Image (cartoon, rainbow, N blue to C red; front, side, top):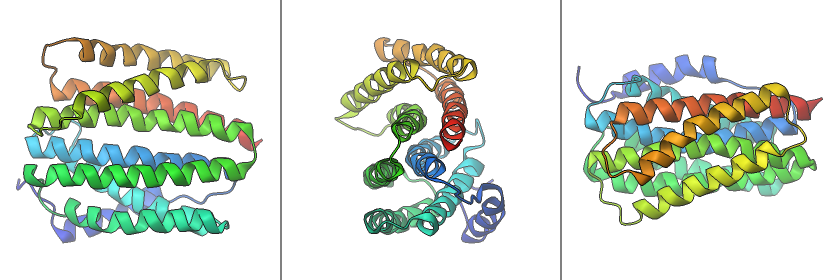
Length: 258
């Protein structure tokens, strides 16, 4: 199979995935959740791009990249349709502008020479998506909006830690790699501590946070070790953390919407 995405394949996948990913935002808490998920998508796209570039098929990164790109675009439209605040709409417009050249890059075969630029572009999109999430959280007028924001950010951090490592394994020279990884891990750890103390926690949420904490220990070990960790293991552990934190975020959202 050729290691590239044709425009026809991408377009077809987008149409199919839009049915799966389409969301109708019904409240502020859900808007914070969906906006926060956009941050995660930026890092997951980078992780998949690197996996494909390395020729690693674990987790079917080609399919995942296509579906994630479709989901990002669909969620962006949903957020724009729901938003009424001028500042939020402006922030969403900024994300749309940043997204267009990224989408064009993702339509092409992964190229190690393009990876550095893609990382920079996705970093800018991450910041724009984070700004939108915080604006939605502020507009909600609830303390729960902040908890949903933090929990949702954990999803992004799980993918960020993985994407940084994937780029390193692929051979991307990033002088800030160590600082970026350390910062992501420190923020993940302190955020987890904040969530563990939340008054919104239920028995189910506490169980999910405990599972996430156990998976995070792997990344702490990886960061301290001088041994090389195989990409498939990084991919799996990051996905375990993503799934658990996504479930926790959904529960926080449901509780806040009552």
